[in-house]
Every structure is written in structure tokens, then in C-alpha cells.
Image (cartoon, rainbow, N blue to C red; front, side):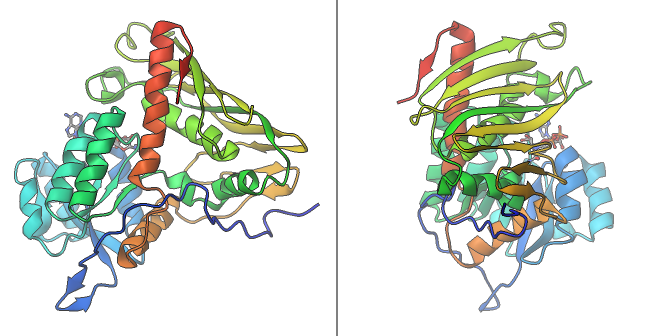
Length: 361
Ligand code: NAD
């Protein structure tokens, strides 16, 4: 039996879509830049606990600026990360970032309802964009974001950190090689217990809901392990805490049918702690738990153990995305990939609302 930890799971195609090439225009004093300056927009949990620390480890990019509506946060970050005053913006003067050569990339880390606006404003300001998941509220918004970046010859990548994780790349590779035969069944779940009651995750207008937030991980688990796009979905919402979850879904169960006949049964939740991926192939199986954590994703397949060490998933993601910009190459996870998920997410919400299956052409 081959030990997959010793095999080279080099991602050669799955998830990598041809995206329009862009002109980087990354020059400082007429010399090409070696490191890109990143400005984080939105200094909440993910920026504070994961992205800013990861930007201390990156080699191809660094924390150059911040955008925040809270002056106290600006002051604290300025001191902690030695950020020059001229690289600190608020939501009102954000567009002036266009005149700042220190900032090459704007990383949108805001509630999902704000992703479109800040991606488009950043692209119009002449900045490349990293945008967090879920990409946007609907496909139309995704299309507008992709168009704005293309029109301004800027790169757009979505913060699907797992696609940069060699453990995820292992099951993507198995799908691509079909070494275990066709996939018959995928079971996947992504969830945690959220104690909060008035956060944007419980607010529909801001882009809350477990399917948008955690469901995209389960959807990625299914799409990437099958290597196909679903053609039909069914879905059900379960709200065990209706006093909190009266606007958005607490838990969503969804089922996906793929062209090859594979089916996936998935769960996203703000009430149930769950983080696993199980795949039944014709000639074997794969089980990972956890499959979508920041660290320690691991499991096994019939081909062997899957347990690649990784210091910082976010540092690897941002370094690889920065390198794609520096080399003027397509992103590993371009806007088009974020939009593929949102297309299915929209169908899942429609299926849950109507109680009917929804076909995806
Ligand atoms: P958070 O609530 O902790 O932070 C959101 C930030 O947006 C805060 O600084 C808040 O002040 C700011 N903000 C500006 N306008 C706002 C408004 N009108 N309402 C609410 N907040 C507003 O959220 P977070 O957990 O950091 O998530 C931010 C984004 O990052 C989301 O898209 C989320 O899905 C994504 N995220 C991704 C991962 C990952 O693993 N890739 C993990 C966590 C979060």
C-alpha cells in the first residue's frame, strides 16, 4: 500500500481555472517588488487571530496597511504591527488607497454582504483583491466582482485556505487520477456551536446563515473530492434555536447529485460541532477528520495515510496568492471558483425554501 504522505500530491489542475491574465504593475522605484503590501479590511476575529499573525510569517507579502471603522483598533494595530499612519484607512476614505504605492493587495475580511462593495472599490483603486469566503450573497454579485477585477486588470482570489493545504490537495488528486475508481458517495459536515445571538452570522442582511458560512466548506469537500459540479440539489433547514435563528438557518442538510452518478450528503451547522469528510469510491474509501481545520487536517485513504504537516495554512495561502500576482499567473482559487460555490448555495437555499429539488444546468 502506498503511503500518501510520501507521495507527491502536486495539484496540477483540479480547482485551477483559467482566468484572465492581468498586468501586475508591481514596481517600486522602477524595480519589480519582491514582496507585496497587503491591507486588511475589517479587523475582526479572522484578521486579528489568523491573518495578521500569518502575515508575520509570509515571504511574498506583508502587512502594510489596515482599513477599520474603529479608531481604537487603528491605534492598537499601528503600535503592534508598526503600521505607518499613512497606511491606515477608514471606510469613508478607503478609496484614497488608490494613491498609496505601499498597498498592492486589499484583503476583504468583512461580513459577506460587504464583499462585493469592497472588492469593487479595491479593484477600481487599482489594487489586487483577496476576498474571504463566502465570496458574495449571490451569483450576480460574484459576476460583478469578477468583472470589476478584470476591467481593472487586477487579480481576484477567494480565501479558500484549504485548497492550499496539502491534505485537501490529496483528495483533490485522488479525484483527478481516479485511482480508486468512481466516487459513489460523499458524506461531509462542517459546523460548530455558536453561542452568539446578535452577530452578523445570525443576521440575514449581513450575509449570515450556516450554509453561507460553514456550508461552503462541506460543499467544497464534496465538489473537490468528486471533481465535478453538481447537477441537482435538495436541502432542508433545521433550526433548533428559533429564538436566535429566526432570520437565517442554524443547520442545513443538503444533498448533491453529480453527473457521474455520485451523490453527496452534507451538513452545515451553527449548532453541531462537526468536521469530517468521508468518500466511498468503487475501489476504496477516504476518511478525514478534521478535514477543514486551520491546522491538523488528517485521515487516511485506501492509498494510505493523509497527514501533511503545515505551519500556517493562511501564510501558505497568502504567499501562493501573492506569488501568482508577482508572476502574473492565474490564482489557484480565483473568483470563478468562489462563484461556483455561490451558484450551488443559491440553489440549496431555494431547495430548502420550496421543499423541491433544484436542477443546476
Ligand atoms: P468578525 O465579526 O469577527 O469581524 C468582522 C469585521 O467587520 C469587524 O471588524 C467589524 O467591525 C467589521 N464590520 C464593518 N462593518 C460591519 C457591519 N456593518 N457589521 C458587522 N461588522 C462590520 O467576523 P470574522 O469572523 O472575522 O469574519 C469576517 C470574514 O472572514 C467573513 O467573510 C468570514 O466568513 C471570513 N472568515 C473566514 C475564515 C476562514 O477560515 N477562511 C474564518 C473566519 C472568518
